Length: 112
Length: 112
Image (cartoon, each protein chain N blue to C red):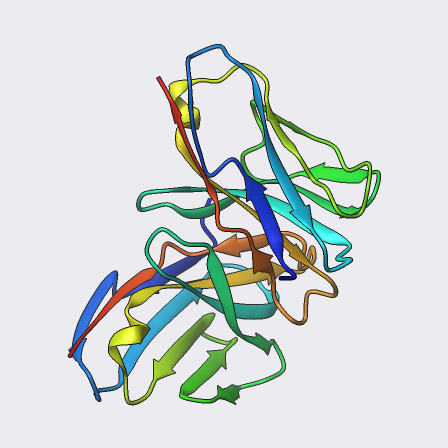
């Protein structure tokens, strides 16, 4: 089924560990974004990309890196995990923006 | 910082009743979107309304936009138990749709 695929679905990290959250879409969308969702906070934009090779920061970029080497993939890297990064992470993509974003099912990350 | 604030934070109704939720935002926008999130799942795009539109319909959904008051409302008519979810508004400021800013959401419970 066409859509946005996120892996893993669940992850527990120790403080200081690094990891990469994977995101892939098969809709040939140019625009991709990473959000984090915390209770009572809605979704906040971490990083976004407007095409392969082009990324930019969102509202809460500190502690995260991204790259976009292909149209399909947009991984999110946590450099040194901290408890404040405990959250649910969503990847989303859109073609033109007018049809809205397609979201993945999320990665629930716990940092202990 | 959050661009949108939804009101009410939570809403409980009976099947068949109408549900109205409101969204207020802070800056000028190009588009406003509404998304639904079922518990533990990703967000699903419902409807997009442009800044030069005042009202839009999609099935049982009716969205209004008042740019002079910087507010929008989502009406779900003849609610069903399956409409139970959280609903978020999202705006793209004049910087573009690649930087969606979400509100904090309204939790809707529809009882049979």
